[in-house]
Length: 185
Image (cartoon, rainbow, N blue to C red; front, side, top):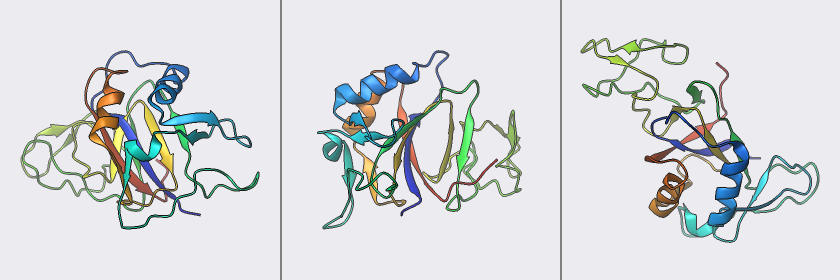
């Protein structure tokens, strides 16, 4: 089993977010998903257009799009997380210190995983919110996530078309990041 995930999220949080049901319907209409897994209803199976909306790297990637048994979790599936009342930082074993949104220097004070409000940059003093920090696609903060499971970091990326299609549901730019062995807190 691959513990990696590709997560899509709004780059900045609008005041109103769709309910999980609306997000699921939008993904289904795009062809990114289809029916839920026959074994786990919270897991959405990739849809007919999934492989055109997510670009897999390498010359011959092998990806399973359906479970082989009730206890199989090594296939590619999607889950929805949120909406949350405030931005949630998601990070994993691949996460590196973020960059200040102002001076682009790393913030390496060790507190970036657990703070609320703004974190001051030790280089320029600029205060950074979770959403302003540049995590270099290795972590992210948002109130809503689309999780694509069993994708190793860098193995696949969402196409510009997919990100643009997501912006029709929630006005504004969407972004993505990868997690490997997600950390708590």
